[in-house]
Image 1 (cartoon, protein in one colour):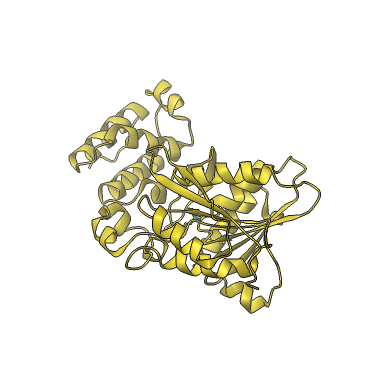
Image 2 (cartoon, protein in one colour; image 1 turned 45 degrees about the vertical axis):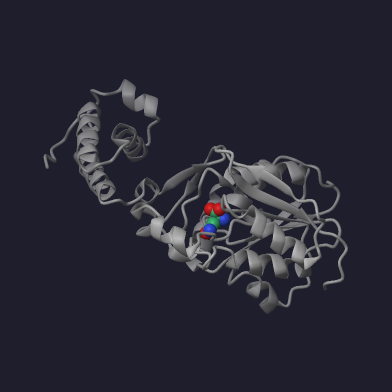
Length: 305
Ligand code: GLN
C-alpha cells in the first residue's frame, strides 16, 4: 500500500477503492465519513478541499482506519463517535453502539416528561445505560428548561459506566445523572435504597438465540454479546425488568418505557399485563420502518410493594 503524503482527493479515491475491493457496499460514503472524522472537518468541507495536502501522520492513520474497516470493525469503533439525537457521543469498543431506532424511545420520553409537573424533582432510572445516550440526550434537552429531573443509570459493564460518565461530562449533565455499576436492580438493592421513580426506562439486550446466529459479522464479532443477547427468546431482560419494576415505581403516576425487538410487542405486553401493576392500555411506537419499537406502560395502583 502506498503510504506517502497525499491530498484529500487522492485519499478519498484510494479509501473508496480499497473498501470496494473488500466487498463494502457503501465504500464511497464510508471513505468520506472516516476522513471527515479523522481530519475533524465536515463532509462538505472535505469535498470542497480535495486538493489540500494531508500530513504524513494523518495519511498513515487513514490507511490504518480503512484497513480496520476492511476487516469488519464497525465505523463507530474506529472513529470513536456516533451521532444520536444530533449529538456526537463518544463510543468505545466493548460498549453497545447506539442505534437510530432508539431515538424513537427518546423522543417519546421527552414528550412524556414534558407533560409531567415542573414543581417537583422527577427521578428516572435507565437500566443498561451503555454509552449513556438515553439519560444524556434527555438531560441535555431539558438543560435550559425549568424541569427538575434526575437520572439514575445502571450497567453491568464498568466500561459502559465509564464511557457514559464521559458522555455526561461532555454534554455537561454529570450533575443530573448518578451512575451505578451492577445488574438490573441489584445495585439499588445493595444500596437499600427506598427511592421510587417517576419512570423506569430500558433498551435491554433483546436478540433471541436464533437471531444471534443470523446477525451480520460486523455486529456478532465486534459488539459485546452481553449487550445484545436476551436469552432463548430474547425476553429474559423484559421478564426481569417488568416483574421487578413495580417495586421501584411511584404507584399510579409513573411509567415503564422499553425499547423492543420488532416481533416482541405481544410477548412483552403479556408480561406487563401479568404483573397486574400496569394499566391495561399501553402505548406502542413504531420506528422509521413501521416496526413496533417502543412500549410505554403506566402504573396502576396495585399492592405490590
Ligand atoms: N441504553 C444503551 C443504548 O440504547 C445501551 C443498550 C444496550 O446495551 N443494550 O444504546
